[in-house]
Length: 168
Image (cartoon, rainbow, N blue to C red; front, side, top):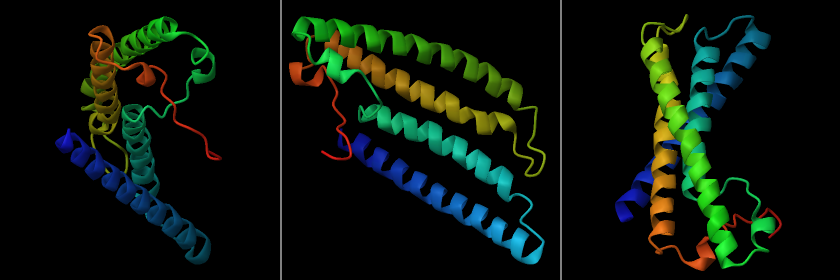
């Protein structure tokens, strides 16, 4: 697990760096356009691609930490058996959605390899692979959680993920 935590920490730093680069590109382009009537040609396209990667890989990191929105207040009122059933249903249905995403994202990535971005010339399949990576990662997280739930290794206090709120 320590290797997984190191990898997640590395990915988080990469996401922070990407966000910084994206912010500098967009801000620089705004200053150049309004101040000097010029601009960085590839700035908008690269920022858009980075935003896609940030969003999708960030969603994977949040899923690993159980930080996505949920109906924890409703499920919290149920007994342990009801919580286990709700957790099973939620994770199973989400896993099915992830498997559908994997299938569609893979097909789209293959088609996108022949299509190139207009300014940078990057194959769109590389850009669209963020969805494939994110959905595969989410499917693995969900499959591991389901395995723990069905094998009885998931403790009762883990059944209802609580991410807290800003004020708590």
